[in-house]
Amino acid sequence: MTTTVLPISKLFQACEPNESISPVDPRYVDFDKARGDSPAPSHARSLRRADPAKPEIKLLAGHRGIGKSSELLRLKKLLEDPATPENPYAPFKVIFFDVNDSLDVNDLDFPDLLVLIAGEVQRQLKEAGIPGFTETTAYFQRVWDDLVKTLGSNVELKGADVEVPFGKLAVEFKNRPTARNLLREAVEKNNTSILAAVNDLLVQANVVLRKDGHFSGLVLLVDGLDKIPLRSLEEGKSNTHVRLFCSRGEQLASLKAHTVYTVPISLIYSPRGAELAQTFGAHQIPMPMICLRGKNKSEPIPTTPGMEKMWEMLERRCTVAGLNIKDVFDRPETGHYLCQMTGGHPRHLMMFMQAAINNVDKLPIRQADAQKAVNNYANSLLREIPDDFWPLLRHFEAPQTYIPKDEKHQQMLFYLHVFEYMNGEPWYEVNPVIRDLHKFKQHG
Image (cartoon, rainbow, N blue to C red; front, side):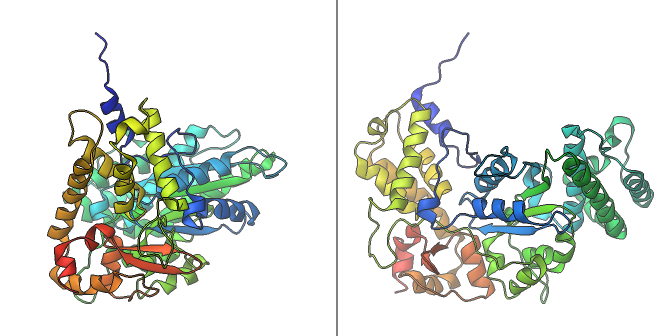
């Protein structure tokens, strides 16, 4: 029996907010014109021009849900594209993975990440079947044997499970939270040799890939690290992001292949954020929010590049669902309202769309349905924002060119209470949904 999927269900599915969109997906929208600057093209140029013997390590920062994963997929495609007269460089072999697929990001530390990198490098190089390359060196095997001895009875690995051993161990990190600290201790004792073994593989793979000139080398794209929760540890200790990217930054920057890591925007505004430039070799410019209006305008204007792109995003999702956008909303102003209330945040637009769709039995979506969808998010913000944040948030009712570097303001950026925009220089504004809340207004 064939099940017919209704157009409204197709639209709901096309608006999945947590799905990263690649440039070949019909739903993909190029937001470069609206952002003012997007990192994928410049990163691609930099990686192509860099000396393979001196790997480039880059960070991709920005608000959660702004499209960093899609930008990494775009970078992957740019790097894998064959040479052309406009781009005379040979393609790269790209190893791409999302830590969320394999690790518990709610409790993640450097040993977990090191094991995952080791496992993904070996697994994806093995699957690539690179001629003349062996994905397991004697050194790599020796390091694994030493680690197994250190682990003792904490992890039991047999037969096919050890074909890509570090990948198996990454699964143990995720599935055995009670043994996680024991596993981390074992990895910490061997972390220098594990990193050296990974680099041994990367160097050999790079040599083989570049030997016949068909490839420019190897690039690692590590996604999902921006989603690690921002948590403070005990008094006097660093938060999770600082501990991973600053305290262990030298090790993250020591991989012997071009590498791009996603990082949370709050880290750029950490008091220790300046260390990133020293460790990773470049000043970090966060991927900006999509600007829906001019910096000095009092209200969003639907004809700005940002609004046009957000509307295009809606149109493409409607087209994929086999619908005309004119039939999805009772009037264009309803769709524009949803776009405006996102503040230029693509994932929020998809979240609002799914919530609005669930408010109706059939299309079109009316203004009241759209407002109810936004109100659901507003109520969640009321519950989550700490009381002492409200007076601070009032400072961002109008555009501000400066945001303090303390932990409270880091949290405001990380949890999307304040948005960063770019128009030659950065500026900061409160999330437009917060601006309409009574609790926000009463602190004026």
